[in-house]
Image (cartoon, rainbow, N blue to C red; front, top):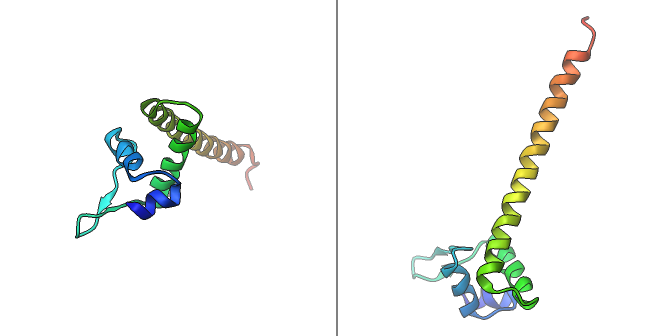
Length: 96
């Protein structure tokens, strides 16, 4: 946990707070040490940015969750549009 906190530029207590707020839930090593993924460290870094701007921790976590949901919805929307465009393109081609 200490190394992860150092990488993100926060204290171990801040990372524990993100766990308490359920933003990130690290895996545990066999020895019981917390192990964070790169994605979780990016979330922690974003939380730090928001908190540094004066956003309360709980609100920062909610913002990050909403940002993540929006990104996923936009990805799905783009995928559906590509799929729809592919079907439309097939229908508009003249038969051979």
